[in-house]
Length: 251
Image (cartoon, rainbow, N blue to C red):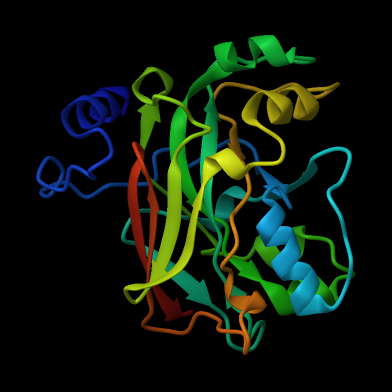
């Protein structure tokens, strides 16, 4: 896994290296993690603003990061299927996110030491059932934890191959239509802050993944809302990391 990440980063620098891996079937880079994924909500100001407009509410930036989790059973490999359960949810949405992979464990990690604990980076698509989120009082876990709701990959790029994780173009298309188009420079809480805050009294372990939030452009905030449907192709793209492609199907 590390060798593939290094080859891709050195040979391609984020141009997706399709020729290098064209004859390889990629699994999720961490297909069977021992723990839930850590995720960050409300970490891009424009995403907060679009959510406020869509829900007719007024929520500002929180003093501390908002954390939730996704279970390992939600993992989808590159080119795998995002699942829709029509009898469970009619509002399946997407969220492209830069994901941080922890390489060295620790607790109460200082911000100035946070990058010493980062092994590398990958892409996570935080598929979200918006109606389920609302149905369960606004708490995130159930609406973001369905089977097939966490595309992950296509590989892990080691930290030394990323020029600056806070200056990466990040975007997502549905059937070739650009829906999200932003930059990780717009994170409200940067990666050292997220690691320091999350690790307060909580041990991070090698292999843990932290998804760092999503920019604006999600489907539920469009007018009218535009949710994913069976047959859609969703492509997440993060500069210097790569491209993650998945297809939506009914379970």
